[in-house]
Length: 302
Image (cartoon, rainbow, N blue to C red):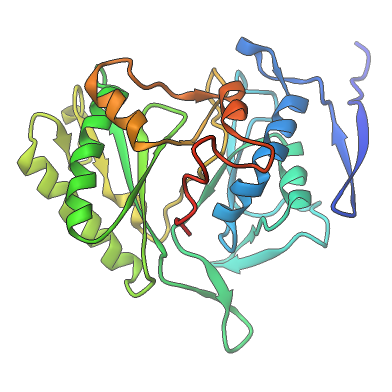
């Protein structure tokens, strides 16, 4: 059997020389989406994706042989990472920071399809060590249990928009690229992760009490069919959530896509009124400057 030698393409990205390998590798066989197309997607969305990963330790999910093969979560930087990559050490883990296109390209070239981040950022402490700041985002993760789908998620999202508006918080909807959706709200940084988690849990319990046929706050999987699980635990400091604009490692190449409330209302009005956004559709939503078709939908979200 002949030895397999990956093809290597050298590129210059922001002054860094990178070796890109096997650009013709099929990462999503169902749509014949190649590694080169995935790299192009991330290069296109980088101007807005990087904003939402800035100063956040980034966990990646890698699919070395595409989405039909095995995957693994990776927190630590790989041992062969170049010295110029920014990094931060937290709880004995050395995470990459992803402030620029060169870093993003390096990580995508390792077949990193998904990028997950916490709701808090890091800063330099007085002693020079990294300081974990209080979260500047609240996230509500809505996970539908079959046969519920995005239709039910949108109905819950509209109820939550009204409730959070009463608290003075503006929600930003993002379909997850998987089954459900996330709702984000900007925070001022005066609450700890534990306090934000408690707030989210209280909201989940309140929604379950008010809409028991639709919402579930308990994690018991046997209770989830035909309801939307309000996952408040995503606000725990140790948890991460898929970053807006990240691809997902599913059969089809869908992305975590910011949505307008008009789209959410259409999804709540009828089943099938909203769908997950695939890579080609996502690229159509992004303009030349890396802006959503309706303007920068997450402009006010840190």
